[in-house]
Amino acid sequence: MKLLIDLFPVILFFAAYKLQGIYVATVVAIAASAAQVAWFRFRHGRTERMHLITLGLLVLFGGMTLALRDPTFVMWKPTIVNWLFALVFLTTQFIGDKPLIQRMMEQAVDAPAFVWRRLNLAWTSFFVLLGLSNLYVVYVGSGFFEAKQALIAASGNAEIDLAHCTDLFSGQVLALCDAARQGEAAWVDFKLFGMMGMTLVFVIAQALYLSKFMSDPDDAPAVSSPRPATVPAKGTVVDPAKVSNS
Image (cartoon, rainbow, N blue to C red; front, top):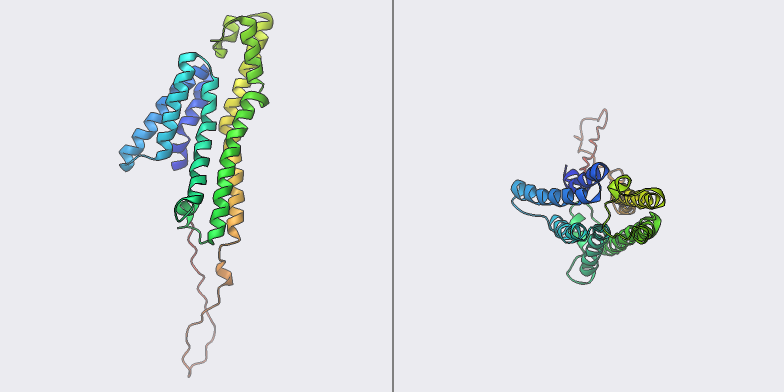
């Protein structure tokens, strides 16, 4: 349930983009993020820092996208968010008695201090990689930026809503507009599915790494119940250890 709430603005952004384009999707994402903060405050009596950071950056970069009619600004938002997380994780590596990942997970996993420090650096590196991957898709992988610049040069207009290419252009300029639109759509798909997939793979890798330091109940020595000395035991019943799934 919490995962669904955390992804609420991203999912609505994706749906709104497919229906109405980047500018409507940006407005929807800002409204959804504000609703997310309000709902969490109403339900739990507090706000989550991650939700507030996301809302603040959406208002800043989304507002610039809407004011300047340039999708590039809102495309930078995931990179800034991930790099801020990387900075927070890196800071706790050197300041405080425990790295952040240990504070988040030590109630569920008992691991040595050096393991937590390695894992904390791994998360720092992962957030940096996510931010770089986002920029790669924006400027290189999707072809969006190159097509957009070519479209601006051909049309003489920097404020183009790519959702209405067929209403605005024809011929070669329409082809450039469609190419920019396809690149923009590729970034939106990456924002939801690509980043989620990368995060899932990393979390699985983290679980495999931590599993080496988790104790196995089967390895614990068996403890038998005391038997009366005068009565021979007909059999031994061993109760399985209870494992808590956290």
